[in-house]
Length: 151
Image (cartoon, rainbow, N blue to C red):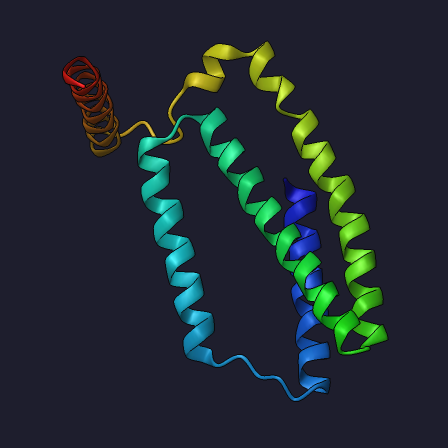
C-alpha cells in the first residue's frame, strides 16, 4: 500500500502541472472538501472495521481511482489530447501492477485469520460502534426473515 500511496502522490503532482497547462484550476474549497470527506470516512470506518475489511475497502477505493483515470483517458482521446492520453496509459499500467500486488497481499489475511479479524481500532468507542453495527445486522436479518414468512 505504501507503493500505491507514493504512486498517488506523484500522479497528483503530475496532474496539477497538466491541469495548470490547460488552465484548469481546482479551487481550494473543493480540495479541502474532498480531504474532509476522506478524513471523516477513514476516521469513522476505522471504528467499525476489522483489519481485513479495511484493507478490502482500501482496494475498492484504489479501483475507483483506476476507473476515474480510465474515464479521463477516454475524455483525453475524445479531445485529442495525446499528452494526457499517454499519461493515463502509463498511469493505468503502473497502477494496474500495484493493484495486482495489493490483491495478492490479501492472502496474508488467510494465513493470519486472528490478525485479520482484529479491529482496526480497539478503543471503547470503537467497540461500541461495532456492537451497534452487529446488533443492527442481526435486527435487519430477523426482520427480513419475518417479512419473507408473511409474503
